[in-house]
Image (tube, rainbow, N blue to C red; front, side, top):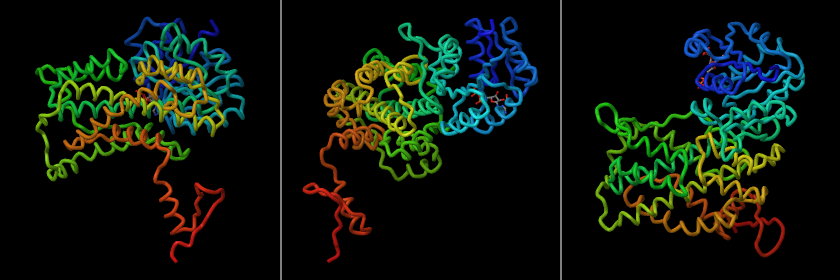
Length: 468
Ligand code: ATR
């Protein structure tokens, strides 16, 4: 019984659903929330569950046996710090705090170090899957000490999503690594969503296809290698009609919000100097979408090309688009995993990428068929330099590159923006180039700043007096 007791603080959507998930799995849950309303609401909605409400932190803590397992599901940032600060006086050595919020990984590292000094164990845990995952099985990324993970793994396995009888949870690595992997998950999510929205835009504004037919196309794609949660929900969204028989998608304002995790991922890529162009393009395009009023004014200057160009053969074009999207998705995951590799070296996390791919395979927003391939590639070689060097993705990208070129060319002709599709191809073309024009950049740097350059014909650093 002792082991089956968990305390949860923070009853937002995620906290509430995780409470229900734990309860369903036979755990006795103590709950606490800063304000009473959410506690009362939960108890009113689920009066018969094995959930015990507490209205003061003191009573909440006293309800838990030592060592206490406390899951924080409060807003990330200041709220998490404040809650930990209030908890500390009530805790003893070997009690475990688990932060399940969307926390910035550097904050997790700081909190881990601070709590370590006073003997309190801390796990920074990324959770993906939204409210549905929290309730029925999430994708879970815990970071901290392995010995502490081992103590809590029995209940994480229960609440995690399952894929082929494997739980989508495993030990990620030390301190902030769990939240880092969650942050990259979100970055890939931004990339994939933008790629899908570009293909929707192309179908709508180049082929002039209606929502119902676009939904059918996504449905077809979802049955093959593009199979994924995001393609599935896109299919459903596009065919959804409101009570007035209108497609809801056409009534939604084209301004995309964000909660900042994509920005964090891009900042990390800049700090670690790892190419992350596709995902960063996706982040920038959310900002660009928010300039609605300016776009409205500026759009008056654009020559609208809304006539379907006759020579496009619809069937071939849709086939190309399917391949172009898959190409883009390959680059999105490639850049995400690459950044994790870079971070693992920098922060000494020793990440296992096939385990991470396994965790992403169910319960989370970026779950997709492609992850099965990624998992097996990293299983064979955890240190592979780039997924594009694996024979599977090498062959795929080689096969699909003419498709993505065709799609981008047609989009440019029609004035349809393809920021992430174009970024995917540019990354691919650069990565697959033995020679890049960086020699000219080096010459320019040396010309104006004496920065020196290396040569192809001899070793060493050189400077030239260019102005003679
Ligand atoms: P979700 O997205 O899951 O709905 P959220 O909005 O990120 O959740 O965070 C919700 C939780 O953080 C709530 O339980 C909230 O408490 P209230 O219901 O009292 O608002 C909690 N929270 C936010 N700020 C807090 C703070 N400064 N101290 C403690 N808890 C806080």
